[in-house]
Amino acid sequence: MEISRALMATDAAIICMDVQRGVLESQKAFIRDKILSAKVPFVAVALTHLDVIAPERRERQILYIIAELKSMNANVPVLIPSDVNVPSVKGLQIVTGIKALRSVLASWASNPDRSARIEEWLKANVRGVLKLATEALTERKEVLVAKDADRQKYIVGKKGEITACH
Image (cartoon, rainbow, N blue to C red; front, side):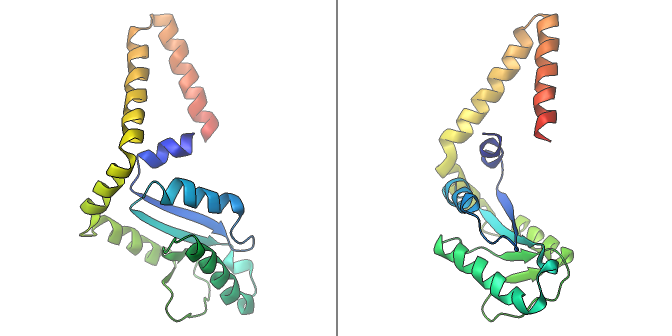
């Protein structure tokens, strides 16, 4: 539930995938059900652990993951945050290195279509956004109307929940 709440408050997502494991069914479901259906405006996939794959196998692994993403209509940039030797694959949007990753994020922030994409995201998620806002206001109201001792218990409980998430 917490991931769903977080996605209601975001306009961008970078999904990390371990290249050694490929695309898991749970990741496919997450991308399909949480990212694509929510119309998150800016999405990318970051491939991790590419450095432990033999150089001659890297291209095949990357192509496999990209094919899996395309089969879900997830035509998103593929990011490789580490500075490893990556084969040049014609027609693929692959970004390597931390500096390149930062430039992708900066391009999202300065994208001229950003407001239109966010408007589309809001239209697709208006009920969820309203529900999230209502829940937040209800929690604040509960804290305000609680007696001092109850308020302290409530706050400690919420801090515990937050700590458990991290």
